[in-house]
Image 1 (tube, rainbow, N blue to C red):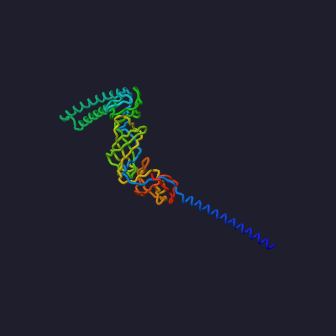
Image 2 (cartoon, rainbow, N blue to C red):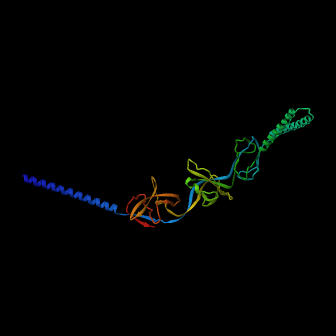
Length: 352
């Protein structure tokens, strides 16, 4: 009986050991097959062979277009508008009378002041003769002379006010929409219209401080505006003498001809600023660049494996980016699948 129990026990233990062995063996095989399938299977990617080239280093920027000269037309004196001598949206010339304010009251004041001036002038003449005859003192003559000078200044002041009733264009240009009509009571606070000179236009833009030393006076830039494929040229004529601390940028201004009048102040400009031409430059497709915490990286193929390389970049265009360091001529650069690649992963590169 005891022998029978012993035999049953041995059989159960042996069967259990066999089952455990088979499970362990199958698990080991599965792990090995997974490792072989995952580690040894190369990832198919595209790539290029890095080579140097001459790079026209152009910086793409956003700017704003402004009128060469622009002013708000207002009256310096208050009164009723008598005449308007311009048409809305028309070209006016420098010195042209734009509108006239009623000056009847001022002219009446001028007549009164002129009478006082003439009387003071006559008193000053008589006092001078009396002084020569020693009939009056020097002090009395000085008082008469001061009265004449005061009356003369009062007349000149009123004449200046009368002159201000005729508002003239300070420069030639196109005048905008007016906000007054004949008979309007105008004050210096009322905006009559805007006058702009659009024969030439200013393009104002800012560049990063690291390019500040590469911008030169009289250099030619090109720009375009939204809704047009035309390219326009402008000449840099002014550079801000300091970098703006808040934005770390340098403000630059260029001027462009606008004889046809197609460009309008207030629009945005897409500026192409030419910098130094770089020889033996390394330029790579933008899709090959992977942003990381410390900068940017790329993957190159090294003996069938992906190798991670930290790069320093500069100017970027729509399709490419200038690499300053990290890559060298002859490297095989991976251009697809870079977001899922890991260092030392097997890769099969198809060079294009």
